[in-house]
Length: 87
Image (cartoon, rainbow, N blue to C red):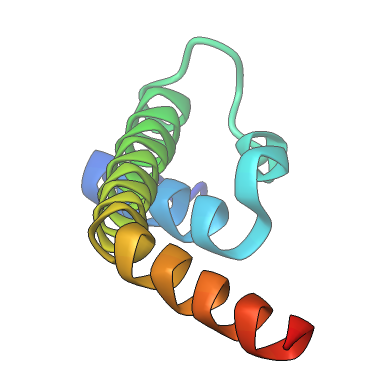
């Protein structure tokens, strides 16, 4: 008997493949070309990849905001330290 997976199961597998293998996880399946299961797998993979890119962008913005906010204080501290070392 052939076991057919639901599209939801295949989407979950696609999301897990991205989390476990990164972009190389896109080929970690044995679904036939053009099958509903492969479409589900790739949809889940793509969704997880998009979410990961959004998280990375959010982290980059937060880091940038943190470094920009503290840049003036850091520069003043470094100048005071350099002056003290030269004295």
